[in-house]
Amino acid sequence: MTINAPTAPAQAGTSHDALAKWVDEVAELTTPDRVIWVDGSPEEWRDVTDALVNAGTFTRLDETKQPDSFRAASDPSDVARVEACTYICSREEKDSGPTNNWMDPDEMKGILTQLFRGSMAGRTMYVIPFVMGHLDAEHPMFGVEITDSEYVVASMRIMARIGAPVLAKMEELQADFVPALHSVGAPLQPGEQDVPWPCNDTKYIVHFPEERMIWSYGSGYGGNALLGKKCYALRIASAVAHDEGWMAEHMLILKLTSPQGKAHYIAAAFPSACGKTNLAMLQPTIPGWKAETLGDDIAWMRFGKDGRLYAVNPEYGFFGVAPGTNQRTNPNAMATLKGGHSIYTNVALTDDGDVWWEGLENEPAHATSWKGADWTPDSTEPAAHPNSRYCTPITQCPILADEYDDPQGVPISAILFGGRRKTTIPLVTEARDWAHGTFMGATLSSETTAAAVGKTGIVRRDPMAMLPFIGYNAGDYLGHWIDIGKQSDASLLPRIYYVNWFRRDDDGGFLWPGFGENSRVLKWIVERIEGTADARETPIGHVPTPEALDVDGLDLTTEQIAEALAVNSKEWQAEIPQIQEWFTKFGDQLPTELQVELDTLTTRLGDC
Ligand code: GTP
Ligand code: SPV
Ligand code: MN
Image (cartoon, rainbow, N blue to C red; front, side):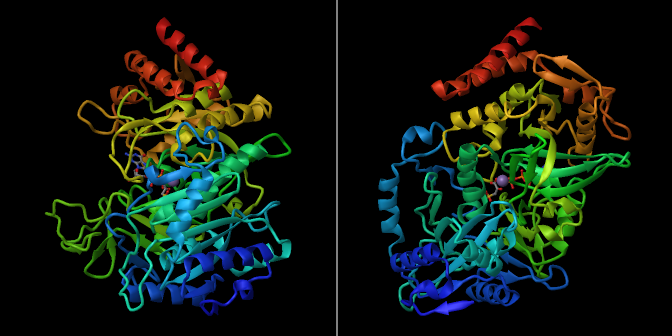
């Protein structure tokens, strides 16, 4: 680490001229006590985590149970993404609408400049060079996060490739980079005692898509603060991808190998806290099938020379939902965490220095809740926040696919869309073609979850699971999907499917056991691609015939399986006006292909 005196020029840290200039400007505006260049070394991890322990942000966990791992509790007001405070500040309002918040970029910069003025006083300003995706990619995607949060430094080290090798390559190329400025917005007066989780009630998560720039203020949590993730790899990258003809999507990537040894790569877009991490690390329950992980949250996809769509995971770690994770639901996440070097945020702390959350085995008789209160199994409040998370290195995942390290990525055979719907949406439906699949994605709906601040359980449209992450006009985004489908031969494009693990029976229980049993659905999908599985045509697409789905050894009745697969025309007829209303939002920006799909669906439903 290079420590500069408070007012020393930051050029000491880099020979990258544009970066040095920007770091100087930010230091002048935010007036930190010192500037530290993050190099990614083991000593630095030790220093930063020690500082976090001393500040009371981190509790070091028991070394035998959770090696080199820490538990953090956030301020109770700073627990998830803040969609209402997230902006896409394109120059023209129409380039951001209709689903994003917008403000004129100059007006927003005026507001933010005032907020950032002196915002790092009494703190250390860290400069984190990072690359999303591979450093040896054809066009490495550089970013630099400036932050006054040690928690962000520690987390970014896990979530992205960062530090000295990245800076060296940036310098060598004098490369363009996305400037990503972050402050928790809690300056310290001389002598003022810090709090364990500094943040500000005023929050702004702001993107300037044309300038490829991010300014984030007031929050220290997850997607609000780890700016390589949602801000860069989805919002900014989606705008870049739109301009350049590729895709930045909220998708997991997995490799599935059949008993015959044939491998397929699958990408899947589910809204936040709807099962991406779990599917990405799936442990198949059907004999002979093998799953391997490539990514659990974000996929960047480009056409290869062979006309197929290739996906890479731009991240380097998992920032996964803790509640519900256990040996049965996600043994591979548990094994990844066993490797240590992890940060747990807003989970409960047990009396013997371990972590616990709802759904984990070995419920303790007593623990400290995420809010710092005494917790027992009789407590009425949960021990862990529903959006509590683990942050852990992807390289520790025992089923990480070797191809993960290939900057070319992997050719995708199938894209899945899915959400949380109690009714209507069958376990799996196959799209007729790319345009129909795009319609499925465009009309994807799901109950809101604790991953974003706001009421949970409300059904909303979440196109391609990207509603909070599209960095430009959402109508143009849907148009981009349609265009992508025209760039290659239909036979080379991924096939598209719509899945729902969350359909309920009359008693409110899940109709489908989910988790490892989802391998049965993946098997049907692969067999469809290979032309060996049966399906029945319905107004909404192809669904498995009951015989085509492998239910061997599954503890479900024929009626239950039929219910999970049912296409209920009444429920679908009720869906039509909702989709029509959703499409109205887009005005002229709605691709005509999608209106045609809706009309076709309406006619087909009318005929049945
Ligand atoms: P983000 O990281 O927010 O983007 O979420 P994600 O899509 O990766 O969600 P994740 O896999 O972490 O799952 C969120 C919650 O859904 C967890 O509590 C899981 O236990 C639960 N879940 C995941 N898969 C299934 C499933 O197949 N069935 C059921 N019933 N629950 C599931
Ligand atoms: C999500 O909300 O989709 C996440 C968590 O993956 S966060 O990084 O906070 O956005
Ligand atoms: Mn996500």
